[in-house]
Length: 297
Image 1 (cartoon, rainbow, N blue to C red):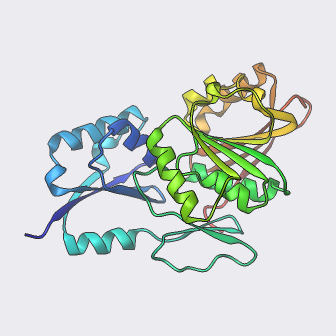
Image 2 (tube, rainbow, N blue to C red):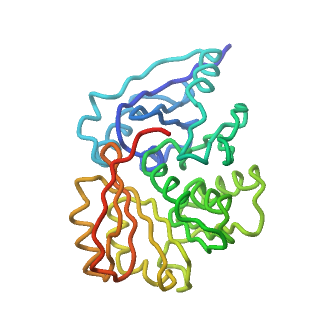
């Protein structure tokens, strides 16, 4: 008897990794994001009304008040599942030089750039979410060569891998989810990285203070707020902190928290309802530049 699958389509700005982290449902086969549409898949025999109720509850806890109105559930036979799964995942270009593609897709890297192969697993970040894209685009402008990078909340490891491909000397990538680190290690091996890329299961406060040229942190608002005074332990003088994962409406609160901890927001980039920031210690007289970036390059 042919297997059947469940496809759940959600119109939301919620990050897939955060959503599945709240669900803690190992039966979910994977997810992908396309703009504001999130697709998630389950085997039919693992799906029941309680899974749907848990999904809607998780969406609401992550701030999607209209969760009950944006969820569509479709049953797929195995043949359609294979076609829909592969067809829903297309390469995505992040900035002028970076392409994220799947192993079965041979799309060429952009001129003068490179491709990373990321086959989605349990949604630890596949490059489709705006919060990831904003930092990747910024890295392409900031990495000059030889930098030491710290990637906080690495998920699938995309930010660390991009930084190394752009010329950074080494990268330490941390996440407090062991499954995310296991997944990231597999991606790193597929893409040919070696000892220059180190992964650890850890929270930021677990690390001993050490200097990095650049710290990238794509995290949720609450975690970013709690780390306001902690980030400074890990930056060299003149180093840069790039943060993402903030809703634009949360920017005033976050900026005030950073400034009280001795930081200055130097640049801000907005896309859809999300905001990413370039932050440095001191330099309080520097004016803030705000840029609304295009959705695609």
